[in-house]
Amino acid sequence: MKKILLIVILGGLLVACGGATPTPYPTYTPYPTYTPYPPPTAVPSAASTSTPAFASKPTPTHTTTAIPTESPIVPTPTPSAGYSGPIMISASNYQSFRGELLPYRPFMVYAWATNPSIGLYNGEIARLAEINDAGVEEIIMFSSWRTLEEKLSQPGHADYLHSIGVTKMGYNSEGGMTPQDEMNNLGSTSPTTNSVVQFVNIAKTYGFEVVWGPIRRTADTVPDAAVRIMFEADLDEIGLQEQKFIEAACVNERVAAVNSTVNRYQSQAGTHPFEVTVQTMPSRCVVGDNYARQNCPAENITYAYQHWGQFVDEIEPIIDSLAIWASGSSDRAQLVNFIRLLRGGTGYQ
Image (cartoon, rainbow, N blue to C red; front, side, top):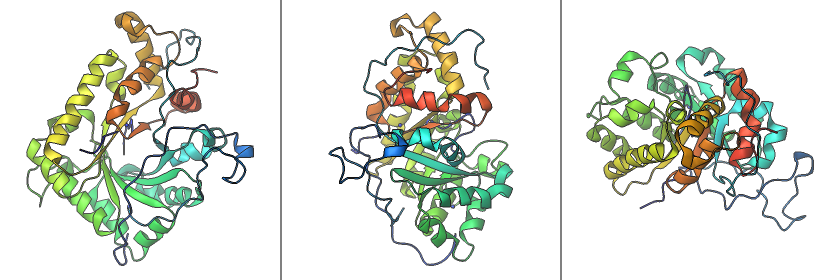
């Protein structure tokens, strides 16, 4: 069975075009044990250092809760080496903080193309076209399979998306963004009506992989038979939104919940490999620290984001990537420090 590894996806989550069917992309291979990059002003080449460096970006062939008013917890070194897998963030945030984030690759960056924001689609795609850093995978997040079909069916658009490095389409199915009939059919057990199956079929036609990022309750309440036909359609990844739950539960409780969900999906996937991403928000992790100090004494919280860091340590063996939803000002302000902690640094600096 494929090792299932962490797209903490978000208070909004995981929230891509025409021409001949492209050659399928290779399955994503996680990078080796994380080695911090040097400052972006002096990124070494493979010829100038013995530390493995990313080669030039390959051409694709496939696929608030408000921060508490109390003073921040004084940071101290984390007890682990840090999370080494891909971290998913928005393309906008990656561009804004690129200089500080380059040492912390690999990343997955997404363009936001949900129905309420579809008017900004061209600008979001332009962002992806501008990003050409090694160790950065590109994704487009939709909230409707019909919108996905509309975009991908435009002559030449799918080929263009492949050419700028887009490998995956995300289906962020949530109320307020996803049409109600699609929401109603997320749990359908018929391949002809299930919304996720429709999304997967369209994306696969144009050579893209697919991640499904529903709200957490939906992930746990869709019937087994619906999950089974999603994998039969070739769903590649499932995103679990943990931000709401980790702020009010001890680490062991949420580890058990993630394990339970992953095991259920594995039981329906059979031999079909799939990946798992887990999402959070920095501001909610601060709330989680405060909850753990009061209710989870075994965690011994002494520095910012430690509660989330311990959670990641525990679930790392069963996830493939982490996702960070940071659209509000407080979450954006904490983003770099939060990623630094995940990579084995400290909290507030």
